[in-house]
Image (tube, rainbow, N blue to C red; front, side):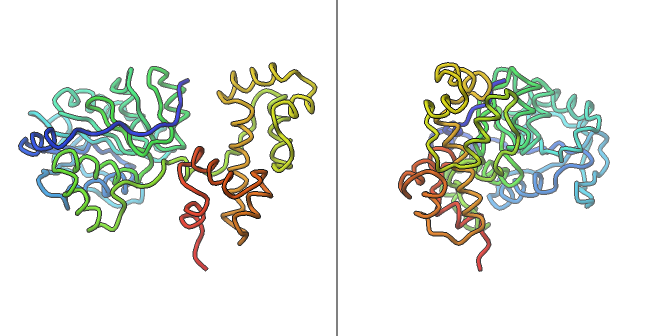
Length: 335
């Protein structure tokens, strides 16, 4: 299973964007019953505001579909009736429960249309449908943080970039959770029509042109314990008292194992060193305190084992991509 954090690849430069702005830009969104409304509405609103796109919705049967919130979406045609070259084939996602539905006909339609599209994009868990269609084999991709592990487990031929808002690998672009479809669509506008047009659309819609940090900042602290009993003990020690001395040598002594053996267990099961694991737990603990108590940053840093606010700031940047002050500002309701 390959899951790793990372940033999206750079999109084409101004010369390539100018060339692309002259080609036809028909966007077909492949939808089915239960599709996430925001996965469809967010990107299409961006493309509509940008202008120069012909937006079409297609379903397996050509009939209207109902979104996850129960609202109907009008559909122009069946996927089988879509013909000719496409600029973009877009595949939105579905709630986790929605994947219990058989979507083999939708996957088959996406697989058939993909070769005629200049690019194929997915929003949120739509990446799982692209993977089922074989379109992510040998590629880097992302999806909603909640579905990253499933994508990596069931499609090991895909390298999952767990912290990106969107990832481009050749003609395939995948994005994180629902609102990340807006980030993705703005990137596509920048590619097709230039950064100034994308910036104007972002201002019109009152959104970031490029959101700071990756999607890991939106993921709640992990509550799943490691499988190995020694690692579960190590996790409990750190979570019970994050400010204690949890250097690798100290953890090894507390667990009555060698430091080398403990390091090997961490790398084999969790893919991190003991030091990075401790840092992640301390960041998670600090997140919880920043969500709630109105403590000064230096006090939070001391309670969570960082020693100083500056050390905590550097750890937040490494783990979440944003400083603690920005995290508190984004994820705490104003008084």
